[in-house]
Image (cartoon, rainbow, N blue to C red; front, top):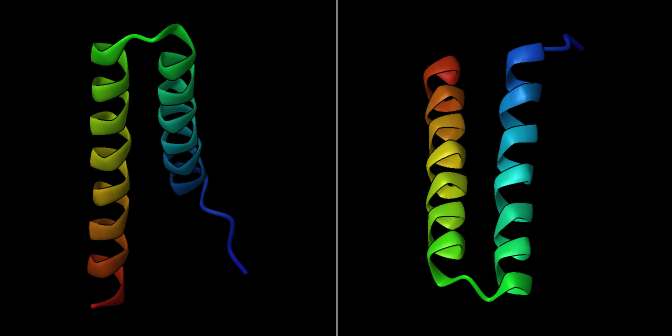
Length: 56
């Protein structure tokens, strides 16, 4: 099994983005929640597209 550092960093950023959404919930900041979710889903979509390109 090969360790891919760039994909690890991407996964870590997705986790941090969704954790930031949790912080936004605690702070009751709607804009922070929306931005954190958009960043999280955007990064996750980018990771999925990378995986599909790699499989092809």
